Image (cartoon, rainbow, N blue to C red; front, side, top):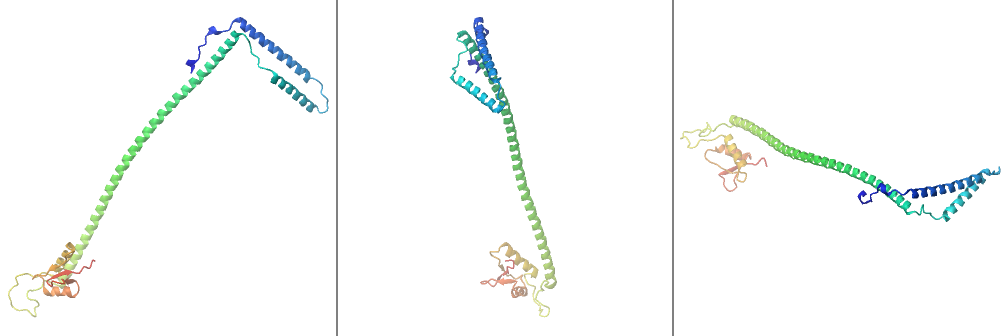
Length: 268
């Protein structure tokens, strides 16, 4: 803003006559003010009656102020001086003051702008740092989530394997207990049946299997192929054991083929 103002130099000082004229006018105005002040003192020095002194004093003061107000209302503004040199000097002096004030304002605004630019740079740097922190935390979160999912899957798989191992051990225990029970109470059948009805005949071509082995065959068939659980009865199956399984509901014959049977689905 300062560069658009006219440059004021020392050459613009008013002449000596103009200064003297301005001083004379100021002295004349000052004398008039002193005369007015003397008149006011004279009016204010009059002796007021003792009764209601304060009220009378206030009334007098109001009248004086009212008279002064009326005079100022009737008075027209007067030009300080009609000398163009004086007016030019005063105008240049006022412009110089305005220029100085505007330069101070401009310097203040520029300083404020610089401070704001520095604050903006700091805020932008802080924002970039915060964005980097957020990005790093997001990556860590994703990594932790992936690791947690992997650990959860591994933990679930390990638990399932442990359960399967326990079930397998329990199954082996049951199978061993069943084998011992059947081996004790249902031994391997002798060729030719019981000793009471034993007769001399030739050794059979197929070796008979135990009741435990028959049950294992039926169980494996039911578990491995539940859609076709029937087993074909061959010569290795001892007939009394087959009748025992059928009579007590442990096994069932095929409704269309009596040479096939299946294990009752107790687990269904």
